[in-house]
Length: 211
Image (cartoon, rainbow, N blue to C red; front, side, top):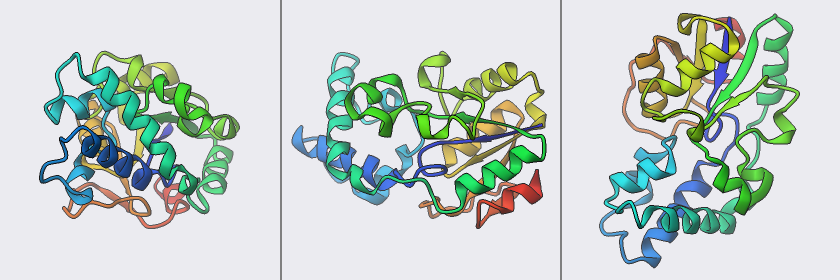
């Protein structure tokens, strides 16, 4: 069995900083248009390259756009923290004999700019999770199945034995494509639509009951 967590918006309360950084970057380039915080939430949990591609950036523009986005996140990074009770809940789940891992849309460029706040496997999480799969580890990131299939392979379990905890529609789509079970982390969910997934967790400790 495996309990796998998304990172931003599930382990870390970082969605506001990430989306506001995206707004700042788009505004500075004159490309914000009619977008708002609420509309840009559709890119929460998706790889940065994918997000900018969907926003109309050319392949040549993407590297610079991503770097500027990450730099702008720094202006809002003071609020990034682990969600309350999350660390203790994961430690308890590990005591049940369940393997734990992270599947994230972060890539390693963020760590070069933001340091440990943007690491794909932050040092403070090393005692809670066995390993991390990031955007650069598979050809396609979320919402495709590839990251979770890679995680299952690394953990030595079947995808059907994995419960993936996430906070976005792209997390749910990735789990569904991979054949994993999915639980919505309501403590980080900022969407408006009903995703129709099996599990809805109001508190990190609720995950233990599902496992």
